Image (tube, rainbow, N blue to C red; front, side):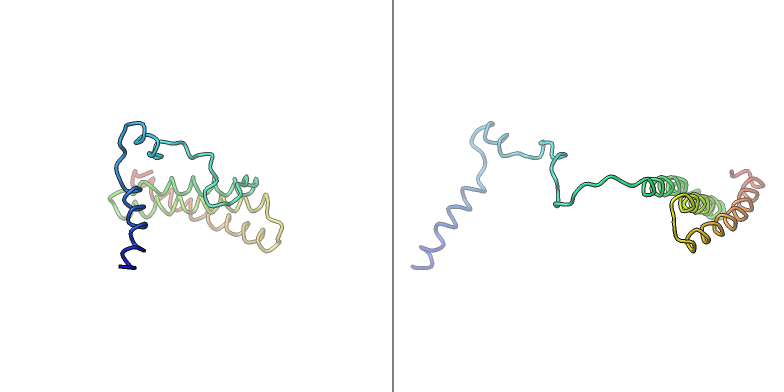
Length: 134
């Protein structure tokens, strides 16, 4: 009997919370799915603006992934086109590094990436052009 008396308030609370609304006004008041929550801080993280370097890396990354998104049925062409976009993205990222990076090793690697990728880009473009796939 003590257990039933202890559970009765919880059962009544659950029944009240899960019941259907009696009126359209109550239904609208309880439905928060249509509310605009865009201004709410979800998760408590402070919103920060991207630095110029971050924005430049993001633009290079977005362009690269857009170029890699269309995958042809021909596996050879798909490889060459995907790698072409990937290499062009590497060049773009390296150019961002040359503009913003301060570390000599990072800048040196960026310079070497540009040189190596440009050679391979030319090779891939020639391959695609020869097959009418560019």
